[in-house]
Image (cartoon, rainbow, N blue to C red; front, side):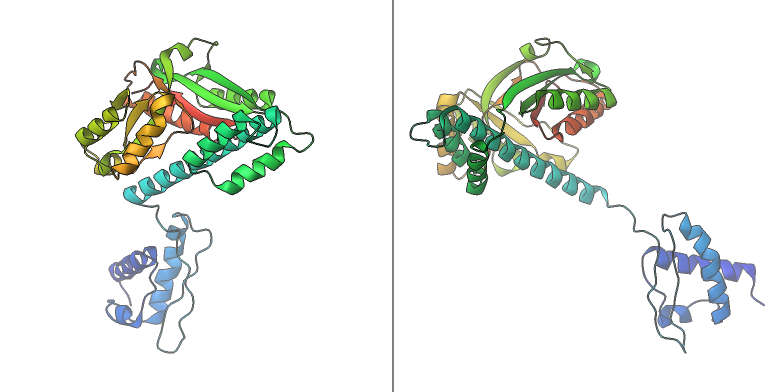
Length: 327
């Protein structure tokens, strides 16, 4: 007869190995306090009900005995990623979304420029300027060519630039920048997200006055000494260098934060050239950015809620950029 404590011991060992996705081998089976196959089978059957609560819809259990071949074993769903892996995945997703939004905005600007003055940049200075910006921002050539063709197709409506103003949590002001060929569709989608995530649509002008439009170069904080960057930027004609947020308690966040070089449109290209000359890696803006004049601090809960609201707004197809005056 097998004691209940022995059964619990078998069950505990098997559950531990099953939860790690490892089939019990002959070597490990020999180390169990019980060696009878019928006892191990009972332990596995009794364990299945517990494993079901871990998220596996229909686990099955097989093991290796002396007279049987090894069969495939299904276990519970793997545990979620660790904190580091989750952060890396989140950052990569944000970077991909940022690049996609940049390409989308340049494509819509190409369409607008072609509709105004034709597909020839020689006779269309607006298109020539957009093409120069696309080259500066490393937008793939095929995206530009595809949107030039799109612009000359019949039925393509003109794109309209709009900025919607939103109140977030803790008194934070949010601006949603849109370039769309369907204004009603855009505003409806923005209203739905703002309502769902606890924000409030603001009247025109009630948030915009908190921001100024500038050209910005983003430099990863871990790639350059901030004093060296300040000297390079100011020497090239920058108006200001905004240091990255301080992340003393989180080295991962610190490695992914950016210094912002603020510039007038006239000095933007010389600054990029100077950075290349000095071997400093950078990320250009998408034509311009809206920077808060006086950023404000909010508590952690409001900060997280605002980040979620802004993230959901940025996922909308017609939205090109989202800004806030949250520090």
